[in-house]
Image (cartoon, rainbow, N blue to C red; front, side, top):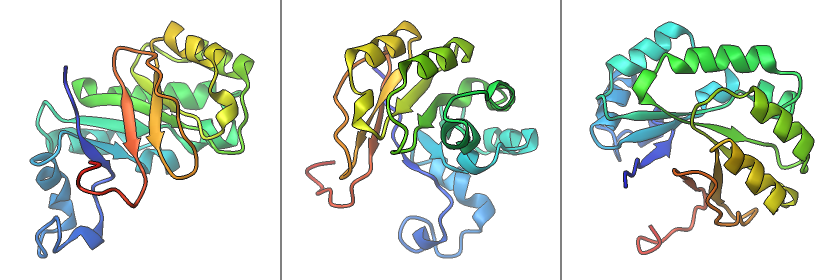
Length: 191
């Protein structure tokens, strides 16, 4: 079994002096990070689909074993709510595919106001190409066997998100998992 452990993002000025050396240039943060962690969740892709040159730069700065988990664009998850977003999905997947073996799961984090709609999810999953992905449902109406079976049918992971807001059931829907530890009060023993 392989584990990829990392953080949500890597480019934080406030980490200088604690994690990063105080004088480390921003351009050197990713290589420094990738020497210590095996993955990162890229939130940047939620706001903007990166240029192919950015993808190439990420690859050039990380070892072959490193993985990038990309957050799906908000245009797909929040604005379209998985509907009528084929063009954006295809373009995002094409760009993400440029990471080759360094592409980890794509995280689809749905808004907390988006309630269960199995028909919409099923239709979306039929359009989704064969790549690793995880769905983080932030409304508890999604947590039932119908949804778990839809994810299983496409070999897509249920994101187990440990937050103060909602308790995600620990269900296995793929042969890989995606765990997000998002509370602020973890003890060393918890982690």
